[in-house]
Image (tube, rainbow, N blue to C red; front, side, top):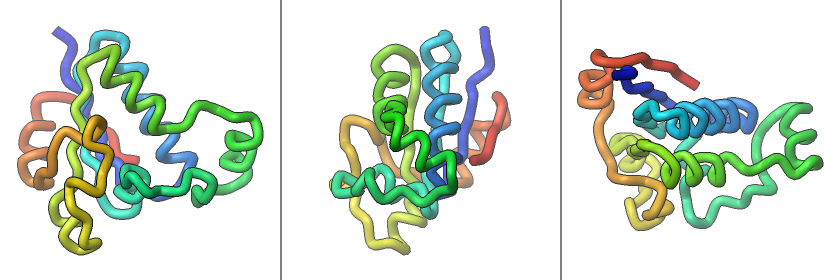
Length: 130
């Protein structure tokens, strides 16, 4: 059995968010379990009211938007629909930013959780940080 891929996503930078989404969705649709822990600046991307025309990023971010590259949220959605992917919002970051679970995409974010448990679970798999 392929070990679970654990991804910590904490950057608000478009290129990093996009790479995390691509990595997670490709792994999930390739029959590899994936768990994503979303924290810090990345948490905004998962808000229902996030304006996707205002990503923070460099030249490549501009190119992706100009060329209508599939949005990271779409890639995460595809990975969840076509594979085994779970997405957790960092409960500490939610508290600091005063974000409720209901403010996030409910069909995308499975639950809120803590970093300690996520890292404990990640000991059995492979961990990547974006």
